[in-house]
Amino acid sequence: MTEKLPDIVEGIQKQSPAVWESYQSLEAELALAGPLDARTRRLVKLALAMGARHEGAVHSHTRRGLREGLSRDELLHVALLGVTTLGWPHATTGRAWILDILDHQK
Image (cartoon, rainbow, N blue to C red):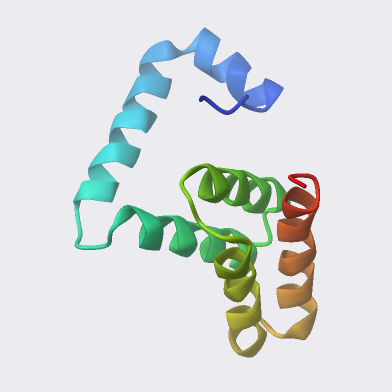
């Protein structure tokens, strides 16, 4: 199942397909460049999205994580781990963004 991309990204994909293909290839190569397994990579990407305060990316990585078999508890643990690194305000905002997706999956 392919996730619908934001309209702005779909526009770039259609206008510059070679750029999009290069981006997709880079993502695949980066995944293979180290020892992390797919589950760990997804959790790290979720944490990075939270740290960068990118709501859309947090939503996206939460949806992808669910599709890939991550549990609610695993996804929420990422937000809890953020408390000492990101601080309470940013960690709880990230948790709220994760819950945006989790609460709509019921």
